[in-house]
Length: 227
Image 1 (cartoon, rainbow, N blue to C red):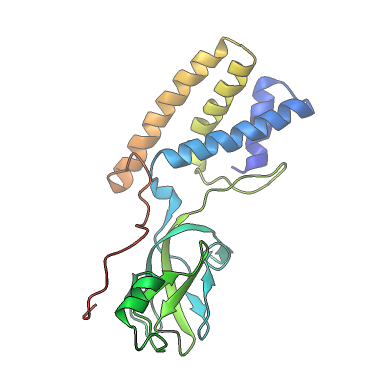
Image 2 (tube, rainbow, N blue to C red):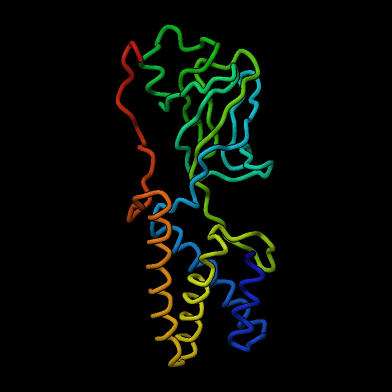
């Protein structure tokens, strides 16, 4: 389901089509969507394999605008792993930092060739070391970036359709509570039951779901000479 369709479904349930009510519903959908997505490291927010991406000589790649999944640009919140697939093999490229590279390769920091490491040059841009000396192909594994949906957006929700009822009950709870309507309590109970079912369903698919998202460490140990 997309954002606009869910807003319309909540309006229908409330039988309230005023502009002011719609604005509140859009706000609640965004808030509730983000809260559910941030509550656990859900499998549906993790992309195991992106499309094979070609990166040019010496170039950086923007993880928000530069990665595609099934030909669609898909923004990454953080990178989990990168593989160099240029030679039809999956060569794991290790994560590091610019400071660690400079400390580990003080006299040969400017070398170019097939990459062994990748690092952030900003919150959104990453670069490889050695610097790419030819166009190379990469596959990314990453956690999707959360989206703030704009009014009327036909953008698909990150929460899969099979769990949209969970999100809708959460939004209805907020709406009825705002209206001081007794139906808020039943919506809250429905939401909690649906959320439990959602957790169990996702757990059964791929095992453990963490209570909080696990982020990549900000800094790794110093690289050894044989890294």
